[in-house]
Length: 285
Image 1 (tube, rainbow, N blue to C red):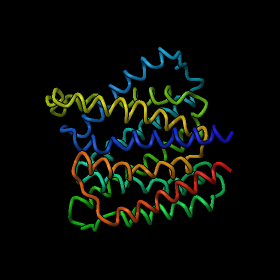
Image 2: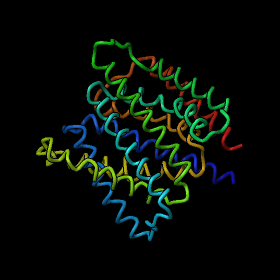
Image 3: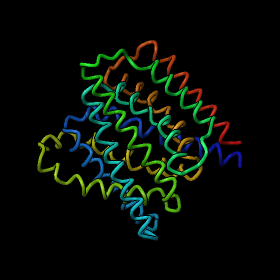
Image 4: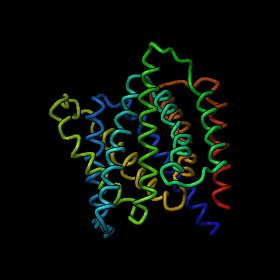
């Protein structure tokens, strides 16, 4: 049991690292946001389809209710991705990721309301610590500049991501995480087909390597592992652990985009990591 719990924590942490790379790639790839998301979805869909065939993973949905759950969660995933990447495009990786990572606090509030359960005081406390950490990490904002707009879009992304995770935890944990992600990608791909005709996609020829990395590692593998982890943690627990993503993202942005973190990054990062340690110990008990 002890080894299994450690394995679950490490698996979720690895998923967090992979997903965190999406922000840097989204900023780096030189194409319109919606086009990036479509290519991300369609390529990841192809990867997961062949993986499901090789591993004989069942793609059968048990009921109409499950179909609705996956459809709604897929739409929310699309909204989350587009608004998150747009936030990063108009501001920077730090702003986009930090505003997105209000979602653990949002999840802690929304999960008991949606599931009609009691509020977990520990999650509320940890969510507050995360918010404080993010506040310390965030640079000074000017309401008239692009950073402020980036924060707003990041908050929209956070709400969509929170509700999507709660819905999946409540109605889709009986399925293989890879299968769930495959169906979500299928929905996103279909819904975003019009963007291929509305935006210039000619630059894709020079962006293939980065799009493939985004689709395979940050999407197909990262999100499938994250959905799988929802079987072992509540949405709130998984969200708090996933809050280490800004730390990974800021480090990657420093390495690949030369975005230099400020001293407050270390203070805020320490607070966020402390909540991960606390939640890991608490969820184990």
